[in-house]
Amino acid sequence: MNSIRYIPHKINTRFYACQLYSSKNWTVEQVIRKYHISKASLMRWMKRFDGTKESLIDKPKTPHSKHPNSHTEAELKSIRDLLRRNPNISTIELYGKLKRKYDYKRHPASLFRFLRKQGIRLEANQTTKKK
Image 1 (tube, one colour):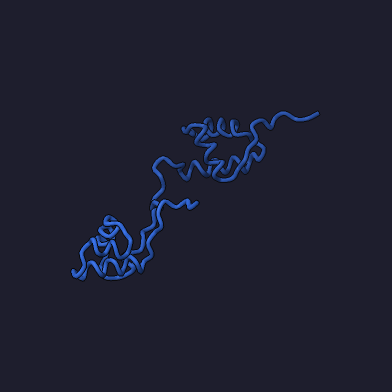
Image 2: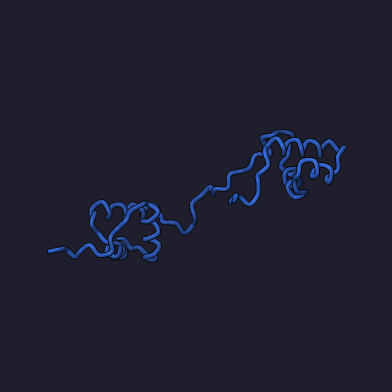
């Protein structure tokens, strides 16, 4: 089973459909029937079409800036410094030190998500030792 919701149209299909429609000899219905596309797709492509294939290439969907609630560089530096100095620290101890010494105001889950994204795995209880 295909996990893609739709099959994206190739640039050549987009280009020739837009070119054919802009020639004014073909109606919308004729173009969408010939190229097996939807009317909405054709109209969306025509908004961007300036006569070149490059104008029909999809734009990247990644954001240009960081999320406004993401960790600041100062917070990230303090987390990394504490982890470097205390390699055997637990997540809760790390959170406590950040809160006391570095004025860390975020929720513990936020710290845990950051550590998980970085691939850093801290044990919950590392203070108990075997005899």
